[in-house]
Image 1 (cartoon, rainbow, N blue to C red):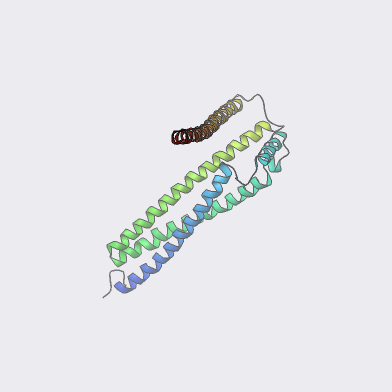
Image 2 (image 1 turned 60 degrees about the vertical axis):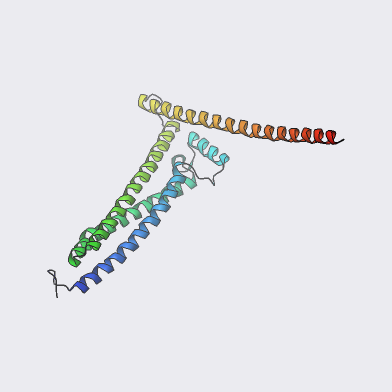
Length: 223
């Protein structure tokens, strides 16, 4: 018996199953690319842990002197920027492909089968796509903010920077205030950690001394 779409229930189910497998492949590919993108974004926004403090300071000096690679970018920065652009475009293509699959092919196929579980599965894929898209937008926005802050710093440090731009000076003052606050907080935390370590060491020493005195007293009483 054919349905209203000229297909038997078996044909409609086989069609939907094929589309489901395709959607699953796109889902896994999207999640894998998004995970790579988030890791890359963390290196761009927070800093590459493989970069030493000396290299980071040298890069900043290059920016201030206007001699860094590509307007002050180090080679590593440039490579990460290029990788981010390629991966970002790839993620957007995958999101577009999966959106088209769900809306133009999979949802109509679910209607042809007439099964509620198929409609629920389409809804689940749409929720996954929405979550991945939201995560990508948030991560991409963080990368863009980091890029804008770095370009602002380069423009202010470069030879062509205008030292009489009130808006630029205000942004730089706010940026410096935030960095100083973070440095102050880190300093306080480091001091607290040092004090805690020293107190633990003193406590261990006192416990050792107390134990020695107790042993002496017990030996004296036995004598």
